[in-house]
Image 1 (cartoon, rainbow over the protein chains, first blue to last red):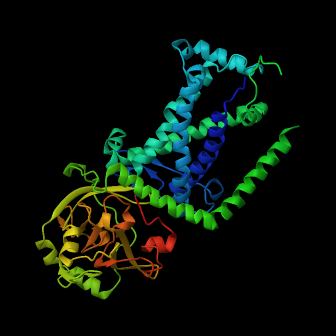
Image 2 (tube, helix red, strand yellow; image 1 turned 90 degrees about the horizontal axis):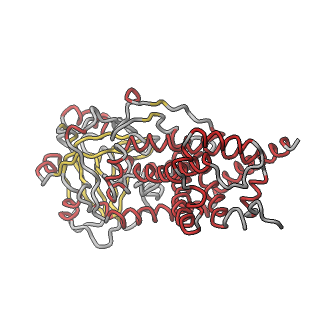
Image 3 (cartoon, rainbow over the protein chains, first blue to last red; image 1 turned 60 degrees about the horizontal axis):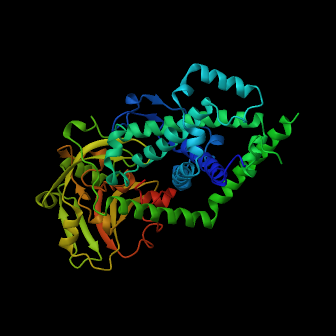
Length: 221
Length: 249
C-alpha cells in the first residue's frame, strides 16, 4: 500500500511551484502600495492598519520592482493553484484521503491529544498510526481555510470578476478588507510552509516518498 | 554531516531558479502565454458576469472623504492652465475615426446630453481604492450619434496629458465601449472634476483598473486595430511598462 496517492504527489509539487511563484510575485505587488486597509476604500497611509515593509529584491519575482511582470506571473500561477485546489479536493473526497486523514473528532482538539501528537512525533518513529491530531488540524486548516481563502480573496480583488459575484466582496467586508485578508492568509501559508519544510528536512525520506509514493509502515517489501 | 551538501544543493536550486526566471521572463513562449492568459481572463469574466454585468454602485455615505489623484496630476501647458482658470469654455471633445459623422462637443454640449450618475469604486493597479460619484453622458450615446462603422473594433481615448515624454492614451473594445457604466465624466461628487483627477473630462471604465480611465480627455477615436497607435499595445502604460491591456484583474 503506497503512502501517497499519485494525485496527492502531483498536486503537491505543482502546488508547491505555484505557491512559490504566487508568494514571491505577491511580495513584488505588495511593494506597489505598502499599506493595508479595512473596508471598501483606502488610499491614504494615515488610514492604514498596517504599513508593510518594502520586500527586498531577493524575495520577489522578478528580482527588481516591476509591477507589470509581477502581476503577469501572479495571475498565471493563480490558475494551477486554484484549479489544482479544486481537483485535489475532489480527489481527496473520492479516494478517502480526506475522511481517513483529515477529519477530526472532538477528542482531537483537546490539549491532551495535541501533547500526545507532539510526543509521538518527536519520538522519531511516527507514521505508523497515520496522521496525528495536530497534523489533522493543521492540514485541515490549510486545505479547508487558508488555501480556499487565497482563491476567494484573490477573486474578490479583481474588478472584472466582481460583477459576477459582488456578494463575495461584501461578505469579506469590502475590497480593501479582501486585499488585507489576502495578505494575512498568504503569510499564514508561509508560516505553514516553513514548519512543513523544516519537519520534512528533519526526515528527508518523507520528501522522497512525496516523489515515489513510498510505502505505508507495516507493509513488507 | 548531511547538512552542508543539502544546503548548497538548495542554494544551487535557488540560483538556478533566479537565472531560469530571468530567461523564462524574456522568452517568446512566456510572452505568448501572458497574452493568451489576458484573453482568457476577459472571456472568463464576461462569461461569468455577462457582457453587461455591472460594477457595484454605492450609497452616497460610502464615498471616500477625498479622491486620490495619481499618474498625471495636471497638464503642463499654458493653454491648459488658462482653460482651467476659466472653467474650460473652449475645451472640445472630438469623436472621429471609423465613424460616419465625426462630431465635436463642448462641455456645455456634453452636459446637455442625457446624464448618468454612478457612485463607484476606483481600483488602482497599485492596490488602493477610492469611491466617488461620477456624472456624464454614456459613451454609447456619443458613438451612436457619430454612427460607428462596423469595421471598428476598438475605441481609443486621446488625452492632453504627457508622462515621461509620451502622450497618454488608452483603448477599450466595443463590449466595454457600449457598457452602460462607461461614461465620459465631467463631474466628481457633484462638482466639476478636480485638476488632479483629470479636469475637465475623464473616462470611467468601471470594470477595469484605474489606468484605463483616461484623464484630460480630448478625443475619442474608433479604430479597427491598435497596431499603429503609440507602440501598438493599446495604452500608455501598456506601451511603457507592459501593463495588461485587459485590466480586469
